[in-house]
Image 1 (spheres, one colour):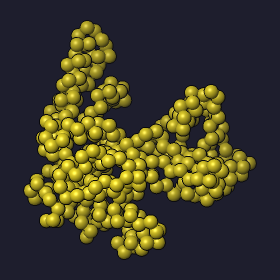
Image 2 (image 1 turned 135 degrees about the horizontal axis):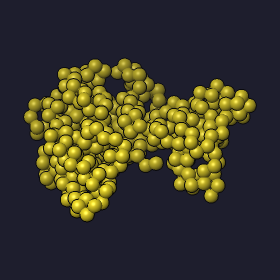
Image 3 (image 1 turned 120 degrees about the horizontal axis):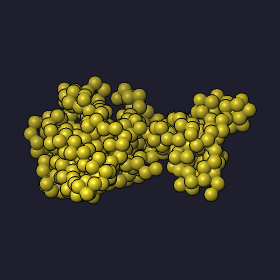
Image 4 (image 1 turned 180 degrees about the vertical axis):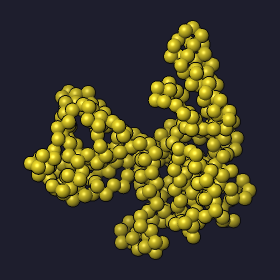
Length: 366
């Protein structure tokens, strides 16, 4: 399944530097001027998972294939973007296409890095982006209301329900609030799904701090955390320049020595990717064979046919059964045959809720 996260923020907050660090397939130009990234750079990011390597050690496959997230580096938004300032309309359209937003916020002082918004103020910076996205959503909701109202007036029941939700969204946005903070049930969310509201997307805030604050944070990151405490969001504190340097190192020993010097247990990028996964309610199952050991992404709460469809739509259409081994059981018994003999391999049907870490083999007929 194609999953995409977009990096946003004001100009010169460290967006392209973060993209350079996380992307293993593309590099963005990181420069100290506005609109450096004119077209959105796109890169694929491997999702780190120690379980994949543990399974590979047992199976010894020809190849190991991690699951990935697509990362889009969207050029810096500015105040007035919703009205077309800078290259606002184009950039806002790029945000519409992503599943989650990684919002980079400047939480460091450096007179050598251009800043047009005055003194460092992460809360104000965040609010500028929020406001632009909210204004764009207001424009979207107004256009949608004008269309749905006509259908509701002629008695379309679904249109009446949608109109009710759209009017709630409009009121919420006019109060300066993002749609993701509006309490809606699954049926209501389905009604507005096709509107693709920008402020409905999950957000991960990256507090880009100086080296001295990378473990503890600082007054700026503290202010950011306090400002989002009522949002359904996450905050990660990191130094984007340090992460970019780590990502450029190919020798594992050099990388470990570098992290030891900075007293790092793991790259903050690993936490960023895992947190993005958590925000989107994503989990991982595995397939394991001599040709490959592979990780597959699925949504929490999916059943076996849906998870089979992640591999190929034919697997879902012709689903019969799934052979399932829990990850811990596979590690304990070390082979599929030993798991089968110990009664740890289960045959599951269409109603089985797939668990994070399940090792699966699908039976299907097309």
